[in-house]
Image 1 (cartoon, rainbow, N blue to C red):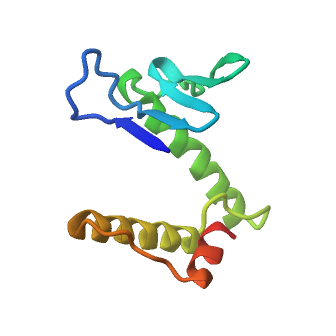
Image 2: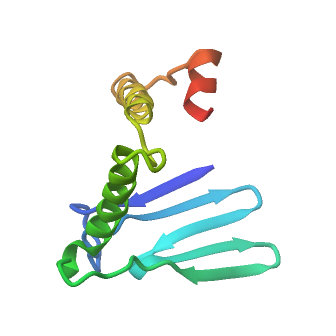
Amino acid sequence: MTVYGGFPGNHLENDVFTQTLIFVEGDRGSAELDRHYWLRVTIESGTHSNRYAPTHRPWMKPDYIASHASIARCNAHLLRALRGEGTAETTGEDNLKTMRLTFAAYASASTGKVMQLSSEETAELVG
């Protein structure tokens, strides 16, 4: 599998800060998250495209709509959890899993080696 990412700060012909662009290619096709929130999945039978634009609110700055929209939903889930009306979409435990993966990625990048996670760590991360 090959993954290419286009992130703010990279040299892009048409910078779309704060959107994250990504292209993933696998054995049976590819997936691309492109400018203006278009998701394209291409397989042998063709390309399927859908646009998943974030919901705009009057208080959101246009350049930051992707970030603001995700934070608004995250905060709504947190508030619901604090009120005892459900669980938060992401928890402190989820964040610790992300940190484990992040530090393993940093270690891999700095050493040039694949970082092996134990089967328990892997099960916990995907569980």
